[in-house]
Length: 319
Image (cartoon, rainbow, N blue to C red; front, side):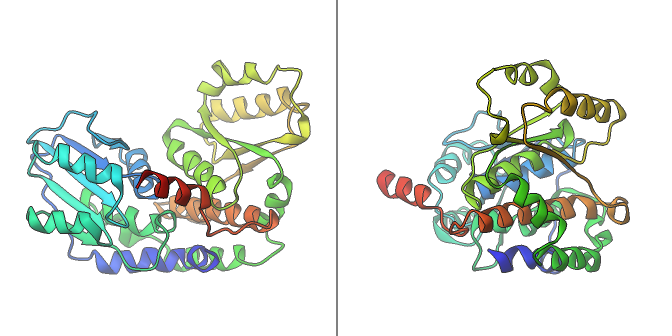
């Protein structure tokens, strides 16, 4: 996992190269449904956040909950191509639209896409699904955005940061030392919900840590009251704020930190650096930053970062 996270900017650069001629006509598309599970759904969630002008629905289920018709673009994403829920969804939904695009590395899904004569993009070999989100996100951006926003990414600067964060005693390693033995609560603004969820999932899988994510200002209307419980152990919880920028929410963050200072062991605000704020480079920086945080927490917890033993057991039992 170390090399996958360190090479994240290269992964994105490769995706830009590989998707140079990729295009799809969405002129008559009224709705985009992106289907996947786990890491294969993550890029769809991020895409939904960064493209509010598009009607994007992300489905993680055996069958459609969204309305699918002839004006719906269905994007089916499964790295292995054998994800049980995704294949089931495809069998239900493919009868309702001919506008289907697949993102996969192979398996049964690729065979179905070829059989049904749908377009697809093949992902590169050798990645755990959760570690290829940069590539998959670049594919989605290339498919759905009219502007060449990927060409504006500052890959060289992203590489510099990735190299810096790969060394011990960097700011992320020091942050991991504060939170690796805690139950982190991750707070984002609504438009970055996907990145809060991404960190939650990466802490689950890479660090073997429980965590949850909430958003501002909603957190201040319910969650904050739950902290009044007198049984809460201050040493057990930490707060991670991810790029809070709206002035009213910055004030809410500061007040919430004050209210909860006797309930949490630490709080940290992760922000996009000024030299990456002008385009989507900042978003890709945050993805890599949060992945490094999960890696260094796993390292400090002395766990097998690559292993997902419980998922493997579950799949075996369900087979």
